[in-house]
Image (cartoon, rainbow, N blue to C red):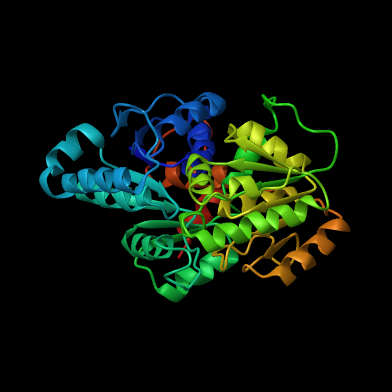
Length: 379
């Protein structure tokens, strides 16, 4: 049995194309919701036409947005690894097989731990990303290193990721795929009409949600100053998560934003990607947004000190590092940026091919001899 353990909005967006590929081929799978972002993922299931979870660790379907509630949730789920192994096998992961987790969040860590406690093998989608700094990002770098060493199958989305996994000498089987599954999500989103009106005049799109930034007054002040500086060049749409708005208010920074900055609440995935496609430039601290901008050939300033992703760096993306000079260099680059179309990969199909072959699942669309040879010879 193929099983998916998903928690955050970003994880659902990147795992949904794999589930959709399996649905298209009439391949059975189970979908477990960790309960971390219950509200976000419920709306996304409607967008991607993915069925409701087979099991959810949350009854109220609300998002976990505070540190205290996140700790309670994590402790509760962790306890099942010790006291609820039989329950995990029979109720959460019936059928055994392989459980796919994604990325580097607390849901990733819990998914690996719970699946292994239930006796399943674990596959890590988007494996091999490294910043080589345990504090940036924290705790994501620690989580991803731990999980990659505990997984049986690791899907590496780039040559750099593959190299990192080889250097780490991970015990699991490494499977290279041509790109990140977010590209398949972008393909899908482009076919669905946005629910908001997209401005006709040029604008910049901004987003900032990482805890190491928004909870630090000095860093958040510098983000506000950056957005104000960009607003001198063109209007800015600042899409904010609930925690971001909370800290902007707590530090009295929302009043410092320029009148040329429009604060917008979180948007559904289709609307946000539509805003991103039509923006002159993007300012964001999200790794997924950096990846999406790379595939969209969109100028992107990564609002972080370090990034574990190479996507677009030196081409369409620059790392801010909280340096004013880097912002000015980015603005100069974005002003004259000319996108170069690229051939977009379809990694979700490759991952589905591997899962079907490795699990010995019979299906109507047989794998090609070339694909079977590729996976049999994978390191």
